[in-house]
Image (cartoon, rainbow, N blue to C red; front, side, top):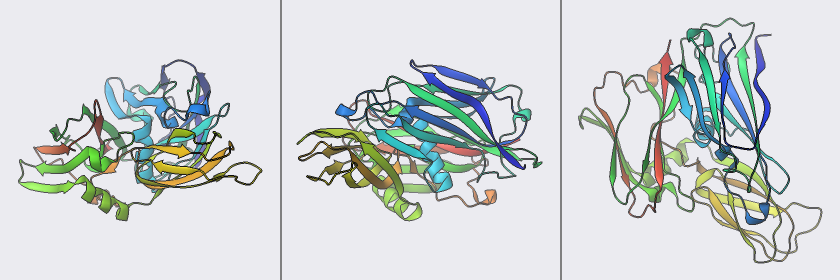
Length: 365
């Protein structure tokens, strides 16, 4: 068989925070690693604590001290959407006694089983996957989570990949009202993606970030200098809508509950009762910017299902155009000696709110 689905880590339960270190003993090139995360829901009567992807606070692929790939669960899930132009599998069941399930892919090629770009373990001395669990960060008052790690691997098909796609969070900083944050961007490898991620529950990215500017060689060239509103409007035209299905436990009349979703920019909702009975009264969904929405029940306590659609999953905002299949079209920053990102915050960003800068680069062997 040309390809196979291999098990890297069997389904394992965690009830306390832990960093799992897994040796990559596979000798064949890896096209994609898949983390399946299941978070339990102990008490859904108060809504959710966080989106299930929050159960993974960091994913790292390392080779000794060399960090080859490093993102948190939310960043990795959002990156996969922009790479694949579709959502990964998710089943958000915010109901007591039932686990939510999300798959978080790590992609090393332009597509699944890309023969030119894949992670080739024998190219490294001691490759390891480090996954840090954050029990209780996702789900509804979760006290336990399960993690399974699988990988799509080249089997009998012989390939000689030229490199792999390496993604990293290069900066995590605290926003300040109307302040500029300057970041020296890496110029060691070509860029496929560049993101800013200003997630704040209840507030859209366009209110957390005012303006984004990219400067080459001290303003000799300025590839980007636009407001976040302009960037988001352009993104709507360039990327598909992110859709997510959620099932929530019932409440009581005039019961407000907060739940978490992936879309952070103008999420929209369509809901109905999830039970073998007609609706007695309507449910209302509102707000939702920043990845947290409120549900209001009317006159019945039945379970509710909702379809959510919107933009900017987990508040990841791409700052470059959608990449083509041809790596020659990607942004080659290696000739640039000075590359700076200037992010001006909004006028009222809140207390202790953060933003992250994320890049994906082509790393050749």
